[in-house]
Image (cartoon, rainbow over all chains, first blue to last red; front, side, top):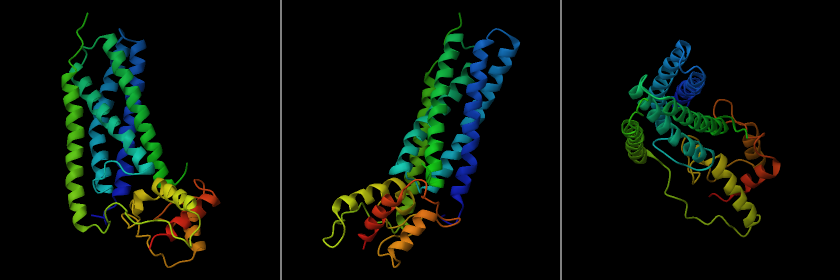
Length: 141
Length: 129
């Protein structure tokens, strides 16, 4: 198992869900300002697609990370902080994607605004997780 | 006015995702334990009369846990990185590796830790026998 490049695979697989979560935040934030317009509907569709693919990608990222650490879910130092950010981010991304798929076009403006808040929190957490991941990889502070 | 979609399904999905990750982690830990050379949590004393101050050793251990343990293991017995006990190289060489790294294997910590911190790390590593 150690001979497989889990570190490289983890690095390769994590950037997609990070980018897609932030993209979903951008699309769905924009949709708040164009709520009743066709453009707003297209933004919501793009956001829904982005968070759905992000959730699927986050599973690959988590699996490769667990294989990399041989199942360690916390750890010390930068790894510990990485995990403190990753687990809530993972749960929020999957939950947000499930809600978005379930809600479709039925969500109210208020519900959608709350959803954007969750996306913002997930983006902040996953960004922080990436920061601590970079610390482990590059040794920079 | 539209009704808010139920939160039950998202909560279940999030819980299942975390539960699945936890279950996978458990399986991987069990498998890794069968072949790991990492010992249980350190019980050894890190203080030695002929070593620099316990404060410096403690500082080195703190730095080690923050920057090194995720690759070398909390007890420095090795994980992704090698076992760091009883190193047969000079203090200068240890400091040089921490500072410059090893291409393709270990990052440089020159920007993260200054000379004093690297010295504390070296002192701590010297306590590992």
